[in-house]
Amino acid sequence: NAGVTQTPKFQVLKTGQSMTLQCAQDMNHEYMSWYRQDPGMGLRLIHYSVGAGITDQGEVPNGYNVSRSTTEDFPLRLLSAAPSQTSVYFCASSAYEYQETQYFGPGTRLLVL
Amino acid sequence: AQSVSQHNHHVILSEAASLELGCNYSYGGTVNLFWYVQYPGQHLQLLLKYFSGDPLVKGIKGFEAEFIKSKFSFNLRKPSVQWSDTAEYFCAVRTGNQFYFGTGTSLTVIP
Image (cartoon, rainbow over all chains, first blue to last red; front, side, top):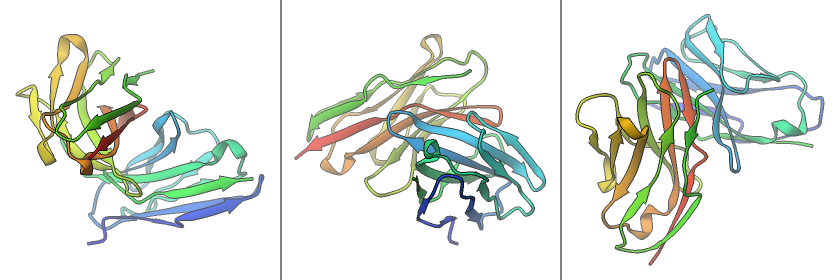
């Protein structure tokens, strides 16, 4: 049971490049989410999904796309990276039941030059 | 928009000192409340959570938190901190499908 995994661990992009951050969980969790963590800002929710085929926007969705074709995977896409997207990105998952806890992945550090 | 405020940005304590970290939220409806910890170089881990019932919640590693509905607060406490408690602590609120995190409090415990 690997929990929540994220790849890559580190990435450097140039402005305008695109990339996909991968997130997978093996706990059969319905709820998955993406956060960005910035100094002094805490974690902010980007997008979330309550099940395969269902996604919705969080607090800071601009510049990011998501899809959920399977229960296990929830990739985050940056179509045209900007320096403002330099951050640490965390994926999390939980069972959908109301009292369930979110489990976080190890994070992806992204630097956009 | 909902907000979660953590008033202490950086706290420095000596071992065995008592700890209290403040957390206030702005949402007036039903909320679930959490405290997460992030040790250096690690990902976030759950310390404790509150959903309903007894407003005094006990978590792992001797931490506890008290939910005071009238004050919209969920403060974290520990009677005696250890060097290994050095970490960043985040308060979080869940409303519906969305989670809101505070900006975090960095705790440094001096041996």
